[in-house]
Image (cartoon, rainbow, N blue to C red; front, side):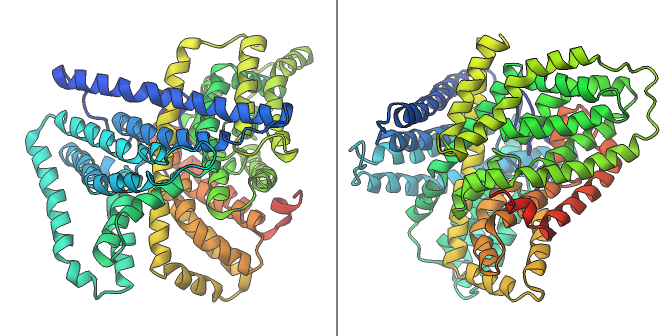
Length: 629
């Protein structure tokens, strides 16, 4: 669900225009500081690829494991996450829900945009000193393999906070209306002061504080257009600071724990792999082959779209990257055949929801990170459920295209199809290379992305002969920004989940869900409904980080296989993510397809109904998820 190039739209942004470009001294400060952050961030992506690839070669080829490789990769990864979050803040690419703000009149919309910046600034000011304290405390710890102070790693947190503070101030300075800035800062200061003065009241409210902070504050911030990571951080910081005696550096520690999990290193690496696939022409080769194979039948190019999204999802693990790779290749020809833009973006969004479980899905990687479920098992279990949803989408396509006029369409000669297949074969092989490497133990789920990157580079240089070196720098920066936006959500959501656990909420939720009548079927039905809503509001990764550690143990307790449960909730979240009016993935599809969002709302209803039927089938037949484990 992320951009395929540095200019492609992000999944949960872009509904509200960015601030105007800075001028004069502000422009120079922004440019210089941006360069000082983007260059190291891009270098860190390459460094992590190199370290992990060296670890695979040393262990599998030379049979001399590098005992320090994971530790060094983890150290670099935290710096990559924080600097990436800084780049995302500078670019306005942090994930946010802007549907409500975008519907406001321009003056109010501008005020809420400024308010969102002021809220980010408030959180960063609150977090600054605890982050420094946390890094200072970590200086006493020596890492086991590298034998250096852990402060070298932990310092990424206060440095990242300080840099985000600087860019927040620069953004406020370039708003253009000091009156609006003053009003936004005054509003945030008044809210903070009000909550601080109400501290004695919170101490006597008990569990009602959970509703106030984790529902009221978090939801209010999200709907006001404040980036999701900062919304989670503000609600968690307020809860722990005002209702408990928890030392505030603990929040930073939980963020560190969530962001630096070695499994999550797969996120930036697979994002970068997805960008390479498009840049090297591998995605185009697959689309050309499928188009030649099916382009002459009724609805043929729609079937190609469904199949191409399935194949590309198996490479990039990123929905917006998938859509940005496929749409430009297919939409022009589909429009020539009479397809309307609303129908095209509706199907594009539906295929985004359909392929959420195709490995190496970033959501599956996140589930493995926060719940302990085997990522290899999740990768294996995700293929068939996505195929089931693809079949129900094909049924809808077949029904809608029964009257399509193909009088002007010529069938591609079998010789041409065979030649396109030969060209596409290296690209078609990549998903199988990735899966085989994980299943056979050549590389871990984190390391295998480096093998995919090496494969894509070789194919681009020597097979497809398409490797524009000038795009490499912007791609690395885009990878860092997108990864930082995701990982900051994971960090603040981990802190929120820890706060919920300490409050006893997890135990209460477990008792409530376990007490539902009807056993596992009712639990799965309630989970589908809940995650459809969560997917439309929070997006998959933060929803999984927040609720996965709470609900997966309940599923296990009720006898629901963890991989089966993972498939059900991921597909349900995908349904919510790409369903208008709140589903932010739908608006990403519209932006990539250059279509008015209104045009796709009616056509997508049939696809959403079909997807819901598919989710129910997957939930009712566990074999579809676990039959090949």
